[in-house]
Length: 277
Ligand code: ATR
Image (tube, rainbow, N blue to C red; front, side, top):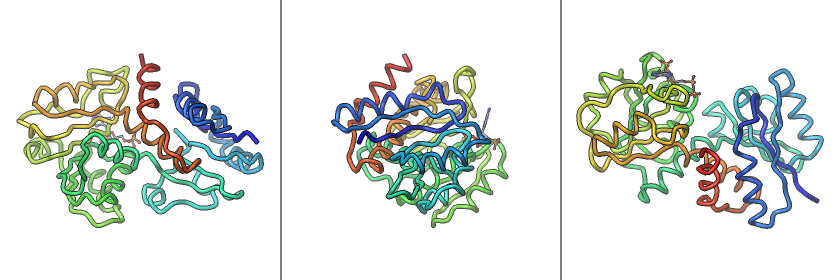
């Protein structure tokens, strides 16, 4: 029987997930389809029960449902519980199990880019919202031992550090304080929405001082492909990395959870880049 997959969100029209998953299903001769499911918040519980009743094999969950969906699932993976958000659900014999592949997808993308373990990378995360949380906990789970968090509102950075369930050395910093130490970091991760289209001139702060030439500066934004923050980082001599990989690898990890098979991530990246124009 043809298996059914999809993504629940509101809005959902612009999602690129059907393009990449349907292409991978076709290439790998998997008899399955991936659809867009426009689910408004008031209908989320019905939609989850409907997915169970219809024996949908798996689905992604996107804005605004990633946290609200949790009580409606039968089981949730430990990391997704810690992060407090689910973006991938698999149906195992009628039980819906939730995972978070956003943070682990980011980690996999960085690992593939660097080709070396991340454990000894002194890391700075910019931002303390939902995206920062997923990336922070996933990096710690991966074994990274020193991760500072800087944020416009210092209290939010402090609170995020307090909530980390795993062992890590972390300091909460203002943007000014982070800039003073900027040369000490091997990995800098920009997670705020500053610089995202249409406000492409925005950035969390102007990079002053030098970066290590071996430092990797990553921005999770992929529209535009090169944010103002990444442009500045490049000018300061650092390597840069945009948000496409996080999107691609969160999808690849979801695909692995659903099918037990590894899709061609290069193909997935090509589709995303083409779609973004
Ligand atoms: P997401 O789930 O996408 O991470 P979020 O939870 O709303 O979104 O978090 C947004 C993050 O971006 C926060 O760290 C926010 O800083 P505050 O805690 O001070 O609100 C940060 N942010 C948003 N716009 C920003 C801007 N223009 N400059 C700097 N930081 C910004």
